[in-house]
Image 1 (cartoon, protein in one colour):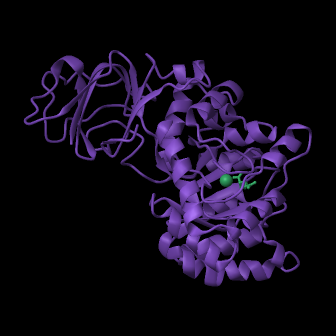
Image 2 (image 1 turned 135 degrees about the horizontal axis):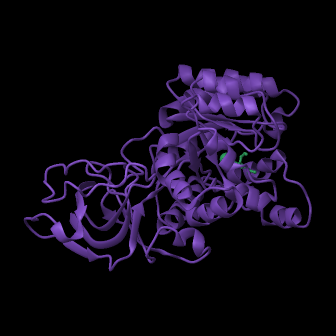
Image 3 (image 1 turned 135 degrees about the vertical axis):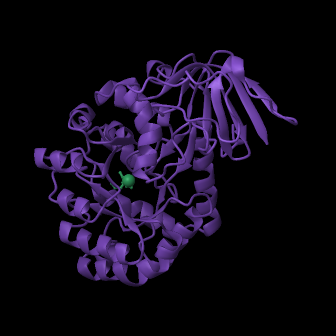
Amino acid sequence: MTTLITNIGELTTNAGAVPDAVGRAAPDATDFVPDAADLCGTLHNAAVLVEGTHIAWVGPADATPEIPGGYEHVDAAGAAVIPGFVDSHSHIVFAGDRATEFEARMAGEPYAAGGIRSTVAATRAASDEQLRHRMRTLAAELYAQGTTTIEIKSGYGLTVADEERIVRIAREITPEVTFLGAHVVPEEYADRPDAYVDLVTGAMLDACAPHSRWIDVFCETGAFTTEQTRRILTAGINHGLTPRLHAAQLGPTDAIPMAIELGAASIDHATHLSDSDIAALAASETVVTLLPGVEFSTRQTYPNARHLIDAGITIALACDTNPGTSYTTSMPLCIALAVREMGMTVSEAIWAATAGGARALRRTDIGIVTPGARADIVLLRAPSRTHLAYRPGVPLVDAVWRAGSRVR
Ligand code: NIG
Ligand code: FE
């Protein structure tokens, strides 16, 4: 399938310079490169050619290359185009909901990690087909709102068989699967948490590693200690998985240096970082993934993204779709919150939701609109990406291509 999108008023490439076309030269387009200082690599009056699953050419709208054979022509009519969102943190394989808990929280109850157990009970009772159906429904919501890459974590099964089926079902729709058997200590192990850690690092990891790319732990008061976390992440590494971490969501932690030492791709939540955590993260390859849907839905303090970015930390934005702390699938909402509540500029928030997510997943083929990248493209019903934050709550995603196929 070949698709030519022309008449793009504002194209976000996330590339400081668009390299020459792969396979096709862009006539007279040598000057058509974004300003290197522009984080979003913006081009105006642009066109994008998609061949098969990848982007073949990016250039000026008035100098599109010869295209032999049939192709679909999309006239963007001056609207904005951005890379598909890369949502690097979700928990979309579960059953039940926790609307009652949300309602109580809005009436003043605090959030506590223990709420996870009620979703665990519902998930254990659900069939594979029920879990698959809910996951696919939520994935469809994500795609319809411009997300083209989804990471999915386990963590609502907490038995060998339930965790194995969650990662196996997640793997049906994404290679970005994270084993989170250490989400919380399940009820049946409440008085012997270290025996549960033995299970996670033993039979559960053996069953889940073949379906997973990543290993994660909820390292927090009420979940797992830093020492338990080190054990679990190290076991995962020994099974070929790469660590990422839920940390500093509910309070300060001493886990950050350990996570960096173990090569964590990302620290997620990261609301309560110390100055030395921030300095260590800035000097590391570890991304910080911020999840503003969580603060919105738990009434907790938003992390100070401005401070983290100014310190030199790479930020990703993700929805953290889950029934407890953030039951949204809307990256545009998270962008609007990041701009309004966390001190990010519009460009920083859009970059974090696309290229930043790709960094958090250690991917170089997504989160960008350049020749050779996967054709993950979102056409907005708006003249600029700024409208995503400027018009919160308005459905501005007009068309979505995922690996070259129209998914909306
Ligand atoms: O990312 N923080 C831990 N895990 C989820 C919440 C899980 C739940 O409350 O069900 C999160 O916020
Ligand atoms: Fe999470």
